[in-house]
Image: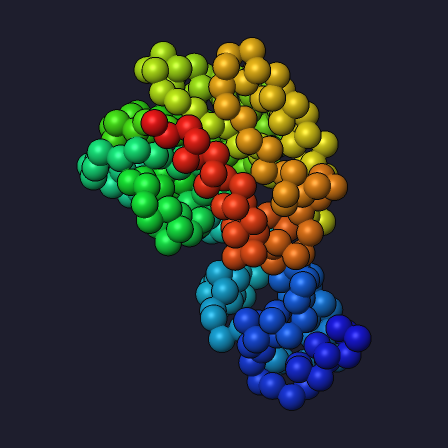
Length: 277
């Protein structure tokens, strides 16, 4: 059924509207949609554009085609993509940490983490709780340790954290993530902070190979929190009860849609209100 819909869409349009197409097909991973479109384009020998946006590869193609040696092409392409990805990630991190260090309103709550935290609708739902969002997309526990002082700069009564999935996806071990995590928690405890650790979320199909490590990390965090009198909230209980993030809650096997955030908030908000004095 999906393949037939995609074929029709490719044949009838010069440019694919991925947003519209995704909403016609959901629940599904957007990566699966794009993969199927690429396969069909190749099979049908079509020139249909998969998006009105110019991708990074599209932008590099003219210079890439000017290089004759295939080995030199691959080396040049890998270098250009590496520079672009690292530069984008690091420039964003630098700007946000600078902002978080400069603008430090006194609040009751800090939400600390990576993209799953940063992209949460906290300002729309926690309207009665003074808070700051200190999530940064792509961040690891290494990056969080580097910027941890920004969490205390706003003098919070409570800090929530969800972290670790970016470390695991980049090949760092559970031992490494857990070591950084405990350093973060110990820092806050030394400064008499109330802490709420939230379980690292399981992933969907594209990243399913990480889920065994996620389970191990969460198990170790539960034990650590019990031993050190730290609050722990199992968000997986409502989002990933089968240790798997379904397309009901995501379009890319990792990040959350509005339905997922609503479900999470229904669990998290009462806990926050209980912990805040």
